[in-house]
Image 1 (cartoon, one colour):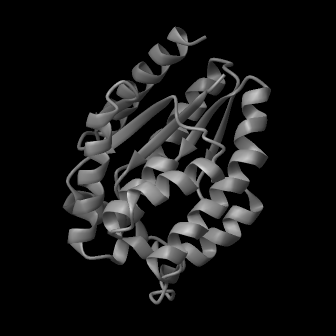
Image 2 (cartoon, helix red, strand yellow; image 1 turned 135 degrees about the horizontal axis):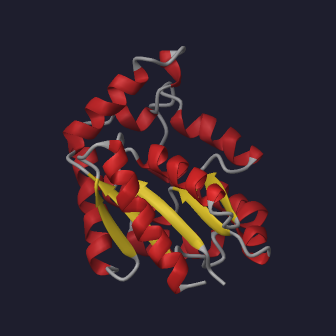
Length: 215
């Protein structure tokens, strides 16, 4: 049974904070689950992520970027996600295939048909059962990301994508919203321009309702 719940959103949307809050709540409820992320959900994926997010790699071609993300996903699905399904666990994943269409198709301008074909192969056609999209204006998200980066011990490890032009981030957000409209049965759009506790309650209600319906 597909028990993949994904968290998506633009830079600084707060999805990573919210997925950790939900993980802690599911622990308290004793619901079998696993928290993971892309591309760093495996040891191999973490090494790939070091290449992808390094701000010194400005010369990386979009095609290289795409195939690195998909290579990490191929490992992630086989090593982490499918075994979790087999053990009956819900999988909470910080980013998955929707991010590839938002960032590499809309952001970078790569062909969607090709992305779909290669992603289906790498992900063994695993797709999310539920996706929470944390939406807010990209200007606010980037401001939040910058404040977060200011507290890093090593500023050089800040995400390479955050340094992209504002038009790139707007294309990413527009694609996310388009995906949510096209697949409204799977997506739940979360207003991320609210206090963290309010968003956490919304997330908890959405996910617990879904889990109860699919138990």
